[in-house]
Image 1 (cartoon, chains in turn yellow, cyan):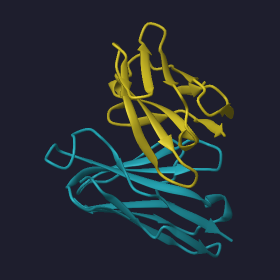
Image 2 (cartoon, each protein chain N blue to C red):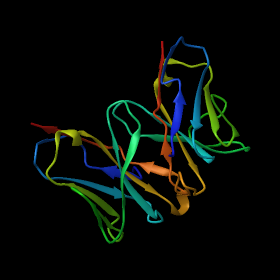
Image 3 (cartoon, rainbow over the protein chains, first blue to last red):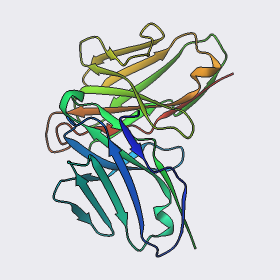
Image 4 (spheres, each protein chain N blue to C red):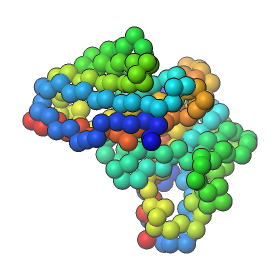
Length: 111
Length: 120
């Protein structure tokens, strides 16, 4: 079983749609969680950290449920520029400073 | 701040040759550097972690004699793929982390732009 698992993609949505990505992690010792965005043939870029209390950054909302070992990312009013692959990442605990990446979910926003 | 560069950005080589990839932190001191590999349609897989001045720690399944990592200074780490074969063709990405200062947050990894290796 992969340490970090994500919804299989791709997600094809129209502009303005709301889209939700789900992610689960298997290592209960993980302490920090992130969503990264990766554009085609580019390096991943940090989108946002994820906190137990939930956090929001503009159109993006991230949630963490430690009991269920579940992380989510909600994108509201999606834009064409949101098209990318979204990577769920866990780190900390017995993993030390390592980032454990999920396989990514591809999002394609269409006009 | 917190810029990480990689060189080259892409390389094509013949099977059996060795390829060196450089990773530099341009405006901060990178106490730790990480090397990842990403195959098409797959996620980033950590290959090894290196701390300045010490030997790299390799992940399970990564051959240390094939993927030579040197982290000789606080701003430079190199990955050498020795005797490269077509199955080594991949996107190699480094990241760097350092102690907190005006440029960086501690324990945050800053990624380089990646190097695309194609072995013919």
